[in-house]
Structure formats: structure tokens, C-alpha cells
Length: 173
Length: 173
DNA sequence: CTCTCGATTGCGGATTCCGTCGCTTTGAGC
DNA sequence: GCTCAAAGCGACGGAATCCGCAATCGAGAG
Image (cartoon, rainbow over all chains, first blue to last red; front, side, top):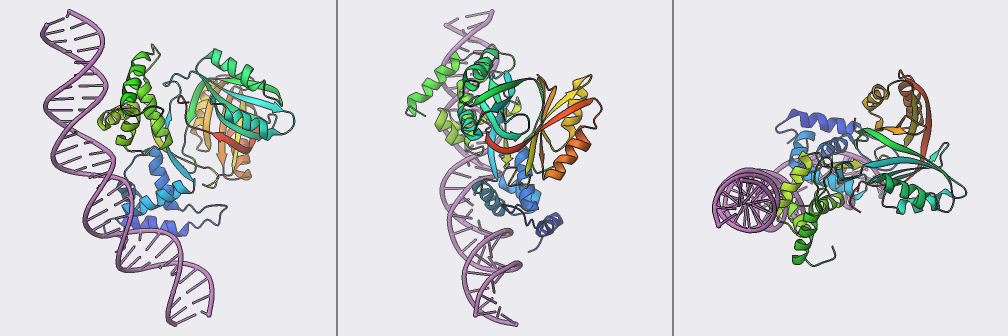
């Protein structure tokens, strides 16, 4: 039983037991983190290969992945390179609002071109990221769609010159 | 989506032919876009199911997916919810630099906690997003890691209060 | 018209996925 | 200490999927 083939599996298991997180919401131990790490490298990697890497059976990996997906801790998706898809103008926009922030944030989240909406503490109330095809499109978005929203007091745009780093590997350094 | 299954394939194909992009890098027609859309919903969806949805055989879908992956237009990865993984403090940081931007951007990109590095036109030279475990960790990053980098003149932080929207569906509205 | 080249299809075998069963461990309650 | 329930894991077999390969189709050049 124990470790039939690899002693590495035992190691991993023991590490897993020790990593009790009396944390906030869900319990993600070291093994699940290792599984996530595998899927961050390749979202389509077979369960058996993941199992071999983290020291678990194929069924156990499958069960844990399903649970992670169900509880919303992780999702497996395709992400594209904006430039390759023909989206050449991106910008971060800081927004100041008068009154309640939430309805403005909701309205911004409705826009397809808006990729990212976050309420912040700082000299901007809201920060959004928008992805456009070209300058004209970008201008249209900022001028016609964002600045005309009721409650928007002012905006400041930061047009992307070069995207230097973008990762999706939170939590697994 | 809208149409049945059989003639939909023809439609998609025709649309595909018309969408010639004399663009910069690669050519992504409507069919590949539809495939990407499928994989944005579920990165592990079987090729046969995707083929049925976009009007292509399983082998053709597989080939196109492989090509999209090879040319770097798309990647299939697991993304996690930062809060669930125990990362509770995020911030956007605007940075002003004296001298060459690139080495500073490179140094920032080296940091594990830095998720996003972009060179912008606007009142900030650089904008980065950082993901931390708690306030102490965040303070350490900004104060010890970022502000001490040679060339960094000043920083302004925007701590996240609420992440309202975050999508990965570029290019496929 | 013919030829070439890239994309697509169909097919068979290896692999993987998925439901299920039984075992072990853990923790709560008496 | 004992029992019981629940959860996690390994094993197994059938169905579905993945993968490579050869043949086919269609568009464009000569």
C-alpha cells in the first residue's frame, strides 16, 4: 500500500498533512496547490500525469480538481494574446465618481470592452482596464461610453505602450 | 449558436474565408475564434464537442487548437481565485521612473508577487498589479522591493477594495 | 487543365476519462 | 474505549476521448 512505486509520493503526502490552514474560506492544502500548479502549466494535462507528479492516483486528482472547480477556487480556461486577436489598443483608466460607487462599477462591468473593474482606495475610486481594436475604438469607449455614465466625475487614461508581464499563477510561486 | 448544425458549418466557413486580416502577425479566422470561445467556457471541453459546435471534425479542431497553442495566440491554463488561495491584499501601483523604463520594468517583472507589468503613456510611466497575502506583505513589497529599485522616483498605490469584474474573453464578444 | 500545397476528414489503436466499489483514516458522540 | 458516519483514496472496467496517419478535397499558380 503506502508508496508502491515512488517514495516521492510519501513525501508529498506528509507535507500535505502538515499544511493545515485554519484560514478564511476554503481549505487548499499543499497537494491541491501542486495540482493547480500542474494545470497552470497546461490546463489539459491528463489526470494520470498530474497524479504521478503530485503523488496521487488518477481518481484522486480528478476528484480534487472537480471540487476545486465546483467551489470556484479555480477554473480552466483559454486565454488569448490580445495582439494576435487583433486588439491593439489597451488602456488602464482611473475614474472618479460622485455618490455611490457600486452602480457605476456595475455599469462599467456591463461593457464588453471592459476587461477588469476594481473599486480602490486611493486617488481613483475605480480602475478599469479596456481592450480595443484601435485608437478610434478606444476614444469612442472613453468618451462616449465611460465619461457619459451618470456619476462619473472625471477619468484619467493610461494607454498601454508595452505589456511586459502578465501571469495567471497566483498562489503558486 | 443560433442556427442548426449542418448549414451552420457552411455559414461559418464562408464567414471565415471573408475575414482576411492583412494584419501584423497571425491569421485567426472566424472558426478559430469560435473554437477559442468554446475553450474560454471550458478549457477541457473535448475536441469532438467543440467540432460539433463550430462545424468541424474532431481532428480539424485538434489541429487548429495545436496551431493556436504553438503560435502563442492562445494558452489553456488554470486560473485561481486569489481570495480562495489565501491572497487577500491586492493593489495597483503607479510608478514614475527617471531614465530608461525597461530595466525597471524588467526588475519588477522578476518579482513573484507582481502579476502584471505595463509601460504606459500618461501620468505614470509604469503600472503594476501586486498580489499579497496581507497588509504587512503588501507594505513590504511596496516599501522594500519596489521603491528601493534604482530609477524609481515615486509610487502611488491603489489598494483593492472590491474586484468587480475580471474576464479572460478577449476578442470574442 | 494539371499540379502543388494546405486544410480537412475518416479511421484504428492507445490513452484517458468516469462511475463505482471497497478500504482506510479521521473525528464526533456516547 | 468503542461505534458510527463521513471523507479521501486506490483499484478496476467500460465508454469516451485523444492521437497519428493516410486519403481526400479545394483553391490558387503555372
